[in-house]
Length: 200
Image: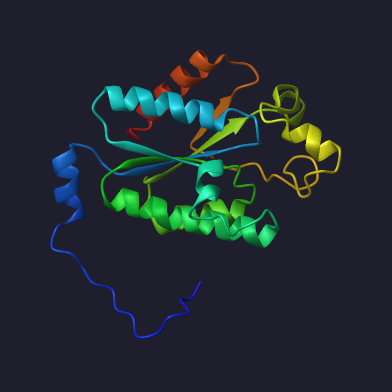
């Protein structure tokens, strides 16, 4: 997307990313949790954030609902708004990576092209797509926010998995099946998978 503003110039700082990462003793990375509403994205991101913080890692979690309270409070759930929602989050996540922070994002992000756009913003290995797989039937049983019930009643239009599509990742770095695992088991499997990929 081309900026609307003209006469703008990028200003390089005098502190490098390498210097920031050396200060933090870690490398910046995007851990991108994607999946249906109720699949367990936020739950696992919260668990991982607590674990990494306890280990002395600097990390930050961007959550779908929270972001829509501020940065993206002018966006709805049309396909165009969903794309803009993820574009903005991608740009914010890129800044976190440049700062040397481990950033976790919990967004349904239903479209592959939008997730691929974020992947392209950073260097290879700096975007880790984590597919939190859970059948819509199981998510609907959980329905922690009562959203599926409202969607079935026609109160929520364009609801992913019911009246709007979800495009599963074709080549995610990590797949966690929360329909088969407890929260503790899923968190351990996630940490093991990230360790094997040297993502942390």
